[in-house]
Length: 107
Image (cartoon, rainbow, N blue to C red; front, side, top):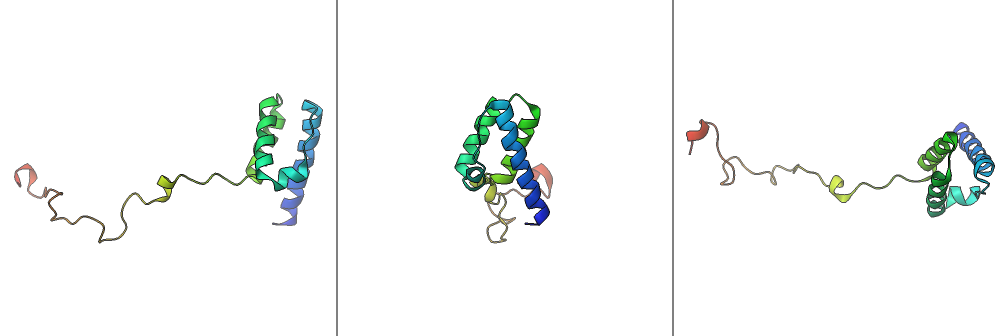
């Protein structure tokens, strides 16, 4: 991670901690927030619920994107919908498929 990005994250965390203290009179453990995903998810959700300031909500969203890994897609999205191997694809002359080369009277 480039040093500029590290400094940007550190500055965002500092602003977040001060804003939470000012607006909600609560404290945030930055060490735990950056290292413990369960704590980060819970604490960010709590602050999101209590926040009445748009700037604080934007910070919560930015920190959630930076600190928490994205949710893994469901297994249905991971499996290919269409078979990719020619052996798995049905053949043109199988009984299940109809031959429409001569129109509706090809039967």
